[in-house]
Length: 219
Image 1 (cartoon, rainbow, N blue to C red):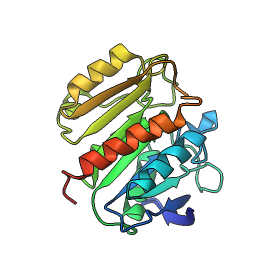
Image 2: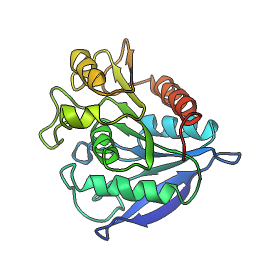
Image 3: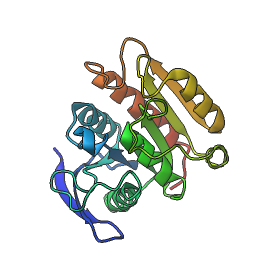
């Protein structure tokens, strides 16, 4: 079961979310970031439910939430820039529910926001970026950070994409992986950006990565 929560950003926007706690004492926490709001993205997509369940089963307290302007979250769409504040507030919220390292996982637009937020937030111990927009990305997804910013990010990063993902093409993802000092690359054959009927497989990969890297990560 997940419990509803509300929390506020540093610009006084109230966001809605749900916390799912581990059945035992959690050894870490996780924040889930959803796809593009203008494309219908929200915390309630089956892929994010699967990731939340898999992380909770491996001992994480998991916060899924809606970005500003989505469903019952206040505010309006921020072009992927103000949403960085949303992720920062979500990290602060989930850390009140569990000690240990915090991992941020984003899908599509959510992966872009999670990456850019983590560059300036040392509380984020690791990243799992699913279907990160790199190629034919929508115009309202901000660009990837500069090569120098990426090279300075030494925390573990999982880069996961479907082989047929036109938004996250493998050649560009491999270039990105080469710029991140501690990146892991996972490509799933037979699927694309949306991972239909592959939700549990994606969730297991994310949760296994989170469990493995948290063992070597300080709080």
